[in-house]
Length: 313
Image 1 (tube, rainbow, N blue to C red):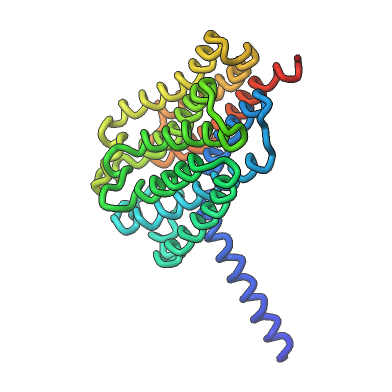
Image 2: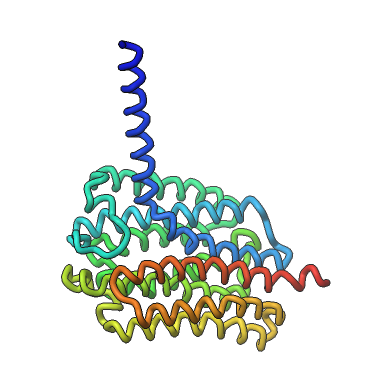
């Protein structure tokens, strides 16, 4: 009987550990991670095209980007809870702080641990590529914290879309390229535009879904300011220009015609635009997930199109 009781206690303990792990995975929001990986993929593709690809810095940039995304998710979870933006009426994925699955102290501690881990990788990248990388990393962490935290939370003043565009577009693509090539190029700057637009589109769907609850909480996102129809138009423009930019790059001689490979994902983009025009509330969660998949697929297609000429030389 004693052995049996000990076995039951161990099983309960293991179950609690497993449950805690699942809660932290929920808090990390793994479905958002393609948004962090996609710009790194594109930046590395341009480094490969230019003969500057370096595996270790590329991997470090990828892991750092994933950690920054997770840290931002944790920070948003706890800061939105503090500001009362997360309520039982929330239509999006479950928030761990608001639902009581984790305490605010636990989530804050997790936030700093994740950002600290990203900073360690940042030190390696700084040693490898110099002070610009250190500056990008510092500003990225600051922006992640300031998105919903601090005295002027960017997301609450309609600046979230611009912040995402800058850090998931320009900073992520150009930064990934820089840690490998130790320089920047005009084509890389151009390539950051469609990535920034597509990842901003993810935020646009998220904020469209939450217009009602955000407005009630005093969270004046750009979606709240634009309204439902205006936000749908913003989403359409983000996707539209993400497909126009590679064409402009080809016209300017920056990429080969093979960059047109991104057009393979156009049917998926059209389907998402149709869905966002018809959907509302929790029904937009599927559009949110679909936009995340589009970002990843687009990044692979764009990258393949960029490096194909290297193999044809």
